[in-house]
Image 1 (cartoon, helix red, strand yellow):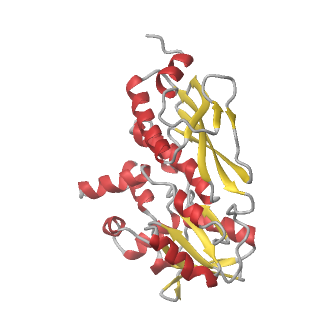
Image 2 (cartoon, rainbow, N blue to C red):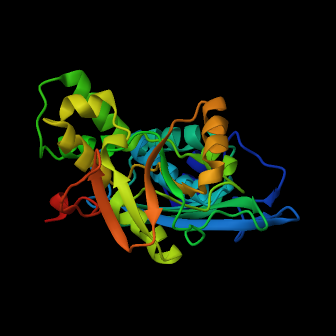
Image 3 (cartoon, one colour):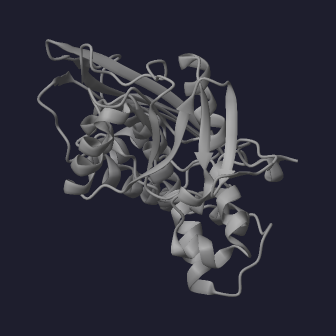
Length: 327
């Protein structure tokens, strides 16, 4: 059985359900030919995932594919962009039909959910790694950025925080849990997060700043503070924590600390002018999107953590991808 590059492309990547009308030429030539609608910016993001750094080499390839694409789509969501196209560069140590079939299943399931067409890429032999470039559209003048926040704005996050870090701790066997169902739920959430694309598009013209939580809330919020030249107060009791994370952690404070530092959550952190908070909360509730108001921007630089109004001195850092595994 031939397993050269063109055979891999033909068997696994050329035949997909998504065929967008704005793609004139995709897989099969040296370049893709695409059409950007008038009045829109093209938003582009590239990320790489490497075995042993971002995922264990023996991880479920279907979950790995989901995580790889979800993390890239999350970057578009953070800018308020609607996903359109993706290219994939896949490096494999050897041809493994079972692994590749499962990978494609996870990849195309998520791509179809967001109407994203695979338009090209590359396959080569080497240490297992995945590089994706996603592209999407955002109306000119409506992109969400990190630099528009003011010192009176409220701070929000979508979804729940901390589950990814808990799942990773279990995957790396840094922590133990006797509840099999609980462990499985948290490990699955580490891989199977959903990008907040709808939330991002709804926040156009409403959020003053936004980004996705990939390196931990504490670390990522710092990017908004730096670009917008403001500080922040975070109310730790307001952090959205799942029932599973609460059961996994020994104390509420431990769960809150995990929510603040957990990376690869792919939820959105965004700021809203106070006068628009009610409208944003009502809009998200109408669409069934969970958001939580977790703090307030301030004129004073840095981040102050408050628990029911009392300062707490937790020494927390951001996400370091699989630091334990690489040591």
